[in-house]
Length: 622
View 1 (cartoon, rainbow, N blue to C red):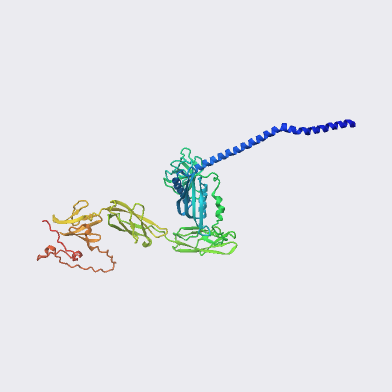
View 2: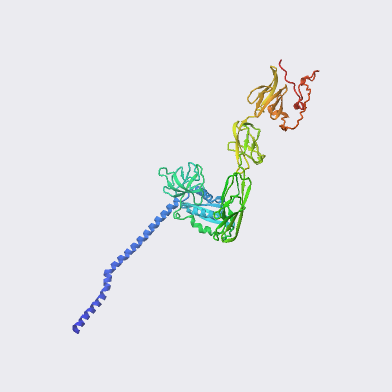
């Protein structure tokens, strides 16, 4: 190619380049402009869609929050809300073992067509663990509430000090919540359960979850429902004593209430509070541990000859990082031994061993610690077996309405009788019956409103032996009206050559006729007639001889000759002087004006009493 041609080519290339630069703006405006506008419109529409989508999600979340809020609201009426919330807070505080508890209603706030709030003031005494348990369960509960105020006063600074707390719990009810008669759904136990039962039945399962597990408050105990019977929805399998509570017996009719856990709190456990509890801000740091080694589980015992003793000595409060404990015995009786490593102590006694107190010394030392030596004295008392006492009771006795009943209970024992303790056994004994301070005298005054009849009284006597032994006796107590006060001596006549005394039992409208030797029975009085005169009679019972004058009732009789004390039986070689009674002339009342007095008999103690005028025996009708 020559220079002329090369110049033409370069000129054409230069023209093409210059032409392209001129056409590019035109291409951008005509071709690419609409594309860019469409992209901008698409970006704007996409952004608007995303904004609307976010607003929609926010609305859905707000709707869900409103739904949850209504479900966890207190009842809509302010009086119901405060009363039921106060009951729930009280039960929760008692469940957390708050002491000196006082729960009172606080202020209320009613924002019409929006919400209402009720306050409950709590004043109590507890420790950090109890307060933490309360706050934990308070936050766990699926309820719209909060702690509005909390004031804590610590009463100490060592260990686990008690705290005086004053808190205000505030609960809320929002507009649109359903009307209810409780904070959470509640039911009852149709039958009682023991502290070990793992199943229960509720009266109605309506409103309770159908899926397990879920928590429920059973009185002051929290239970975890782990299974629901497929046929009987009200029959549940439960885990007892949850959330720091203790399993206990529950009577029929006791309430069981759902304890729903708030959303977002199901994975929170009380163990999350451990670090806070272990580093209590209310207590000073624990000083370095000071060990005080001692011997435990070595206990004095009383056994019978031939029995064995077995116990295991333990080392307590010992720093075992230094060395293991070592046990030994000193002054031990024959046959007693102890394992140096385990501390197991054994002693088998012979049947013919002498009853006595046998003492030995248990020694505690420690390997690698020559300065440690702890001693403890062990006393084993060999004692003959203790026999049960024997109680003596009459088969029956009589108690009179309105009058004091007294019974002396006798008992024998192989030990000192002064150590015997008397009491009533069972729940069927009459109310108010008891032993007096002397110990063996049973007293009771039957009220006049008491129903007459026969009652079984069980008396128990316990000795002071080791172990203590007891015996129980049964007495049939016949409670009766006071017929003695309503039975009068109305007269005496002679029939068939024998004196006859007439009586009138006003209570039963009976008029018995009795002779000498007959017995008169009224209330607790049981006496034999020994003499019948015109204006009085004499009767005899274990207490002595009694005089009853004409017209008197049996309660008005007078003891004129007490029964003699039991005579002491003389020894075989003793000489006993027996006095010979002298004849005494007794003038009958009707013979005082005659010249020939009648010799009756030796004058008795009753006849010597100047306060009583003797009547002549009733004359025969012959």
